[in-house]
Length: 267
Image (cartoon, rainbow, N blue to C red; front, side):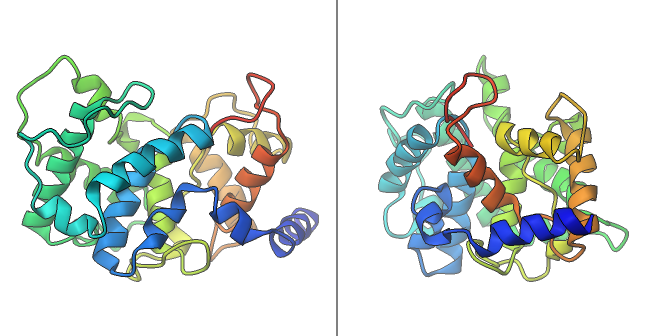
């Protein structure tokens, strides 16, 4: 374990954070100074963090151009009947999915004041990780949806998966990392959430690294694997089990080999 810790620390110390931040979707919330804008921008950016890095950041850029210099103000005044996000397409998501997500965020801000306050309502003293409050957070967001049933429901709800269903919830755990961690590149806006409770945002790159480190033998990048690898990272860094996530994911992408297709792709 000491050897693994030394290896991870050496990677962390020698890592070029500014260069990686310039390529990473976290750069979008970092553009804003108001915590309310950062929170909304972070949720939108993390929600779309799938697929090739260049492609997904191009799509997030489209969304950020739409929400403008004050994302929180845009969401509070959002008109779900309008034509916002026209022409948007990212993987299986379409303009109507982003409009529905924006409408859901609007309802959350109107009722709870912020996503932070909604998340904090779901925290219990017995929670050892963010998994239980994240389950409650997702349930709270889903309960605010007023849209009639649609043939796109399954696609839309993939933006808000629940840990209770066994999903790795990579994008939601990424959002929580951005919100709760105090150190760069993360935002550290939710001081009431301890970084020690965070779970690893497990994508194909992190899964591959964890298998190589022998943190897991599981082939499925699912919720059980998230729990397993997070325990291993927590044994190394109890107060900050996702400390090495950013470094390891970007290091793996920089290797130029995608675990399935033989080329760099996705985060």
